[in-house]
Image (cartoon, rainbow, N blue to C red; front, side):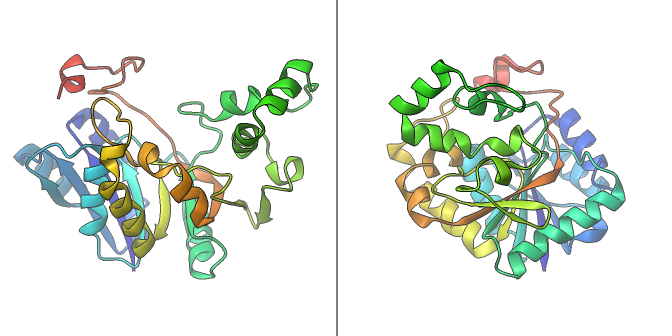
Length: 275
């Protein structure tokens, strides 16, 4: 059973546009749920209009608490975790093929987690971080880049794992990190970070990671005053698990139209940032 879960807080314009883009996705899943932080009657109405079951919390649990609440209320053995600003950005035929390929990576035991975000989407892109340590396509390796890698070899390797945002075939550029598996590129979590962005994973693994993060959140830095899985999970725990992470071409983008708490976002809302 495949469950589709979307985390949402406010941002109704963004949510409506995102859920509208899921028209061709819904027939491919067995369950569709939106988990709302600070759930309201308007939230429930929007979810119902687009064929989703509304779940939620009366308070704002943040990204970590909300994602954990979302995964806990899903019933599938495989879950797809999304946020309200992750619209589908591929045609229906491509969507169906890529989702099935991702599912097969999990069921065949070739990957423990599959990233589903468009790896070339310029928003939240890893491209700049990679290029700060490694040359891009058709670019020469400079003395500055070599010096950075020499002085910070462990970080350089982690930045090398962001190559899928830069190269069509990252396995050809970094064969020590990536292995090609069909249309995906698989690497260990020693190199590839955990990401809050769209992913597919066994529900048991998603719960394990998020519950660990929830238990260790007090030790971590926060984002906008709230703990987030990316900050809590990425570290010794994540690298020590050495999970197999598949990076695909993706089926989701990022598009925010209202109520962003990030000051650099065009949809920044200071009221949301204070909540």
